[in-house]
Image 1 (cartoon, rainbow, N blue to C red):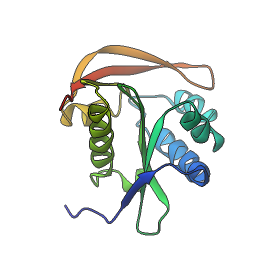
Image 2 (cartoon, helix red, strand yellow):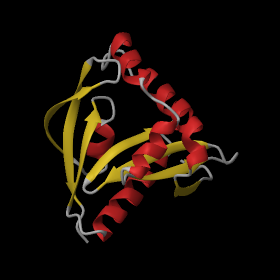
Image 3 (tube, rainbow, N blue to C red):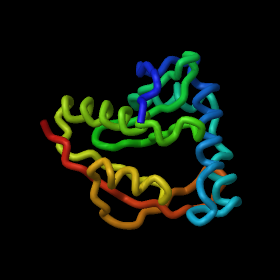
Image 4 (cartoon, helix red, strand yellow):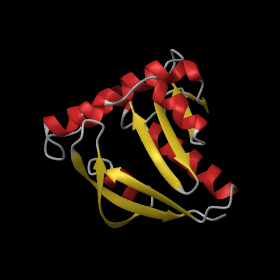
Amino acid sequence: MAIPPMVVRPFRPDDGPALAVLHRRAILALPDQDYSRAERKSWARGISAGGYAAAVADEELIQVALGGSAEPIAYCAHRDDSILGLCVDPDWQRHVIGRRLLQRAESMMAASGCEVARVNSSVSAAPFFVRCGYRLLGDGRHLTPGGLTVATLRLEKFIAL
């Protein structure tokens, strides 16, 4: 598979609107067998353009992947030893973009002294994390902005340098 051209750079505040759109699109595109329509709508409900800048102000590190048109097509957010979000626009999924962003975040985490990377993954994304070397720890839960609690899976991976 040819790797599409892309640039990865740190988040900039003007990325917020595009990240909010792709984040909503990715959540709403999750398969029906993993999340009901009501769960997906509840999860996507509270996403706002300003939320990403607020997360960065709260010491999250967000790396943004830009496609050929220089528009954000994916992002990965992490803090300390946790991957807090990895989101690829549905039109760009299955092109190694998520894997490249995850590897970059893991490298940054390892360089800062983390030995293990942890993620509370959507049920839909858990197989991706397993393919990337994560091991399943057990079930988790996520309270969505719309007030529903959805099933997640907790995973971890040894990343020490």
